[in-house]
Length: 306
Length: 308
Image (cartoon, rainbow over all chains, first blue to last red; front, side, top):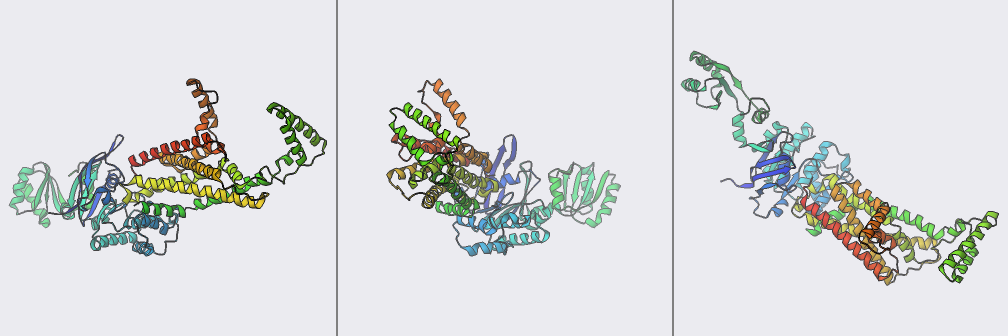
């Protein structure tokens, strides 16, 4: 049985008339990189705030089962960068770091320099944080989240404002933290392509609800290349598909069949369906990346909700 | 945890420019105000000579009643004014000010009573608490996510310490200006002074708590500072007077009832070095009630509210 670090149970947050998170159940495995995918306003930040102890749930609960300690103690083992980095603009990067270090009982100045080096801000520690570029602020925010050597990192859109090189660096850094320091990471990002390079598990959220929770392997399965057949008579089409020796296929709904093997035999399949007088509305090879899949799942592409 | 929070917040204060700027501004204000008290010849400005003033004082002392004293003084004043009109008297700006011969303690009392300390404290508190909200600082402090009351209490303690620093600096500046401008340096560091120092410090802390409460409620630097300025400038005194009259009529209270007597600012302004026990106790009670209520209100807000 896999060991979970965090389990939420019907976690709900209501702001006046708006339900920002609606009975959210997520299961974050220890050592995983858990990607939270959702549109703006879907409720990602609200969920992150609740599990970081910044917002109180209206109902439901969450438990840091992997920490074996009280919730208050567990918060000490979390590093979070949620929404904009919390930076005092009139202070230098070093001072911002020192404020948090002192709050965590860390007095070692070299520790701050090491963290700033890690996020690529070495040499910038004397500069006022207000004068940092957007990307530098984001890096400082990540460095702040790493103070106290957390076991669990919560990163809300951490690559916002970073240039392509910066994005690659952050990805590399997060992978390193996950692999070498065994830090579990919960991350959200709009750049799904990037997220797909990092995450080992996903939850897709829409309108405050978790639509789907899956592993990277399961998601890749759903996103892989396939022959998509649209027909009014799925029941009659299935024996034809079986007869041609296709083994890996699934009926998506009463009009759609996805066939995953022998993609090169699409012409033969089309001909056999025609011979059997099965009306085919469309047939073709489809491949979707995470972004397309997300759009389908959340119903952003009309009529395409899976 | 308390020590960690204290060190962290103390470091933040130590890196805020306003911490030092406000102490420097305090020095400039004390210098200007004490110059007026010590070296500007108020009587000379009105055209009175030292002899005129002594004559006025003698006449006043000789008068049998308050009314006689007033009338005699008024008459003497008229005569002196006639002299000015005739051009017999020259106007002196610099000379011996009204507190020229007074002690450091008296000068300190006058400075504290002028309430500009409160103005500076409100700016400090507004900036210190307001920046928690403007920067989202508490988002970084996950280890205090379940201990927000502790973090809040540390902040209030630091406000109390800063009030003490401001209070001490006012005295130091008074000492310096006395040494520079007064006739002699007399400290008068007696029991009455220590009590006055302590009670006015308590009132300053209570005032800081009120401003902090406003900053917490509105999550705004500006709102806290504005309230502090309004209160310390006495802009609500008319409102308080009207409320006093209404309460007096409604509850059939004594004619000398004044709601203003129960405000923090009035007590700072009215408390003297040798005020009797009744006034001192009233000031202490006011400080504790206002400070306590503001502290509790802010605590409730901090505990209930999500961190934005």
